Length: 311
View 1 (cartoon, helix red, strand yellow):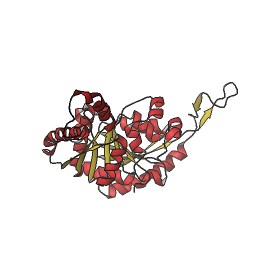
View 2 (view 1 turned 120 degrees about the vertical axis):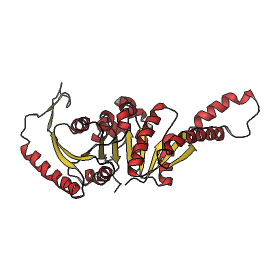
View 3 (view 1 turned 45 degrees about the horizontal axis):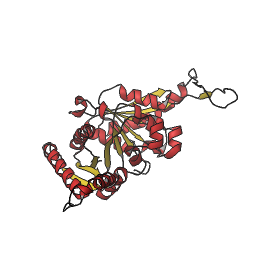
View 4 (view 1 turned 120 degrees about the horizontal axis):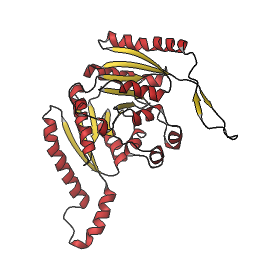
């Protein structure tokens, strides 16, 4: 399970909200928590260059001064967090955010990174990326992604995880999410919902001789056999979970995978999605997208992403 959790934080209120949720997770799983703040050296160099004419240089470098100040602020905040019984460590490093997060996670030997993301347009995100995106595609460590605006006071309290949605599709890759989801259910007492979505065929309509255009789903096809097979497939995971003393059920949906997964998670407060990702990146990911990516952006629920190399 998760024994060491890394939480990147900055001065924003959003990162503090994530931290409160992570403390609840660490307490439930009996994990140690490391708070990481990354000092952007480029910003400091710019500020230093503009201030050189104001007086003699300080005894300590500007970077060291900022690191000392940030570390002191985090230590103050850690006092209240430690009062919850969670072991809290503080790390402040200089560098670029994504690279530093990945490096620190590897050096510290953490087995979970918990961080926030923001909803952006596909175009802006595809071209510019985000710190969370870059971390997700640069590490084999599981990544818990949360959107601060979706975390209410209720979701930060006891019983904050009550419903764990585990999307499966019959592949070995998707099944790598089963073990961490099961262990999370054991730690929190949540219900496991093993889910498979039967995808409907899609038909494109040519427009003016161009081979793309409006898209229609074959909504009236008979999927009864596929649903029966999916139910049998999921039932073995339900039985394994119940044999381990956990609560579990199977749920088969028909339609668009990302929409159905999101709807399943949205049906219950205190839900979290645990799913594997194939790790596609770059322009391919921006154009095509992925079920995991769409779930992260639209679920309004925490998503625990299990990279393909994680066992």
